[in-house]
Amino acid sequence: MLLKKVLGLVVVTLFSIAAVACGSPAVETEPETESAQAEAPTEPPPTEAPPTEAPEPEEEKTVIEWWDYYGMTELNEELESAIALFEAEHPNIDIERTVVGFVDLVPAILEGVETGELPDIMIVDNPNHQALAAVGAMADLTDIIADWDDKDQYFDGPWSSTVFQGRNYGVPFESNATAMYYNADMLAEVGLDKAPETWEELRDVAEQLTTEERSGFCFSTSGTEEGTFTFLPFLWQAGSDIPTIGDEGSVEALSLINNLVNVDQSSPGDPMGQGTVYEQFITGQCAMMINGPWQMPNFDRDGVSFEWGVAPWPTGVESASILGGENFAIGANTDVEEAWTVIDWMTDPVNLRSSLLAVGLPNRQDMADDPGWSDPNIKVFVDQVAVARPRAYGPNYPEISEVVWTMYRNVIEGTQTPEEAAAAAGELVTPLLP
Image (cartoon, rainbow, N blue to C red):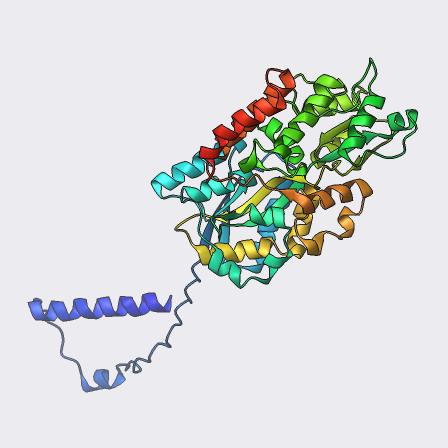
């Protein structure tokens, strides 16, 4: 209000000066007497207005764009809570989260590479990590992570899923792995009180448990990525790997599959995914199955009444499971420093715990013994994450996976012997490797 008065005074003063300069017409008046002049009031001298303090400018906030596909999962609410807590502790940073459909995220990122409009933070399925790094979608974090103490806490499998050509392009977020579920009541019927621990035991126990009404051992046999996801641990346990398909280990892994499905007929060979495998297990059509921790909440929902448990994968010459889950990454040519502040906070065990309890398993040693995962069945999955391996085979992994599941299906269907299938797949895989 004071400022308006001062401005008004300035305007009036300027108007008066202008009027005199233009020469206003003369007006006749009675001459003032001396007493009138003496009685005329005099105005006090103007006083200076106190200076007004300008309002302090608000600190400019950094906006971090975040993409993930957790909108319809149990983790959605936990992520929203974590983001709100981070923003409360970091008032200079706003996170704008966008939820994208699972099948839409990678195409959206690839489009962002073309347009140069990538999010600051993205959470990606770990088998896609290397391919996205290869096309320039992700910032190279090697130098930042070199001085990050937490890097030494991660299990080898989850950590290696973020590495491409020796450089680091992210940090593991949540991980999972597969293991063996077993029907304890059915095992007791054949005089067993524990699940098989080796390949030899697996084949023997699966035969014992097989009847006209049920299969002894079920696993995903689909000609899709789920088939590759299920077969790879058999390949690794045999001492082989995708780059060496065609060797003795790969033939042994395929021979085990052939024996279970075609020779012993203790495992069904019809194409089925993990969901169907679970349905057959809870309805008594399978005595043992390979599946993931995401099925555990369903047992209560579906009213399963028989005794069941979880055991590690039966081993060949090595122990192995397969890594699932997601990783954090930072978009190329974005605000790497501020985005790293967010990721560093989000992956701190104190801040990460509630998100992992909602879905996923710890992928770092300093969280493996947390009481939140003390349930014996859940602990088995945590231990499997520690030996799980990623599908980290470079940008051509989708094509490589198709070669693997085709080889797998050819053996299951009996159209090729293990030796023939392995040799043919080896020739196709080699040119696709990095």
